[in-house]
Length: 169
Image 1: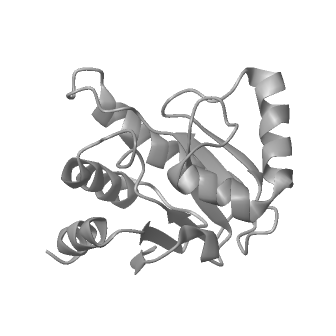
Image 2: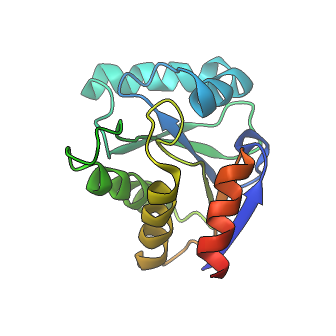
């Protein structure tokens, strides 16, 4: 497995799956979630509604998969990161589970490539340095079968430099 770092927009990634930092409702929101729903079109929301009817949304740390609609990726894996609460609510384990469960879905689908955003570091206020450390550790410790490329896609320069340091240091 090759771990790659990209500075840019995850909605432009041509990979088997992009990961969406979703909310528990799966009905879209701000940040990367809003961008994925806007650029992917109504097919993503349609499938999210079906999942909601079946299981009532998506719990923090869990992941579900839908079409990618009009996006260049094949699928979108929606995972719900934890809201930062000072580290008192098992946030680290929940964030680790986001990456782990997303990778498990990608492996189950025999995907070759997956791209992750910086989960929970926007409106959920997870400290960027800690979130990046958890993300890199989770991805590096996973037991890969089919996945050959894992991307961290950083929209903002601060996250990019944090990941760059973690991955080269």
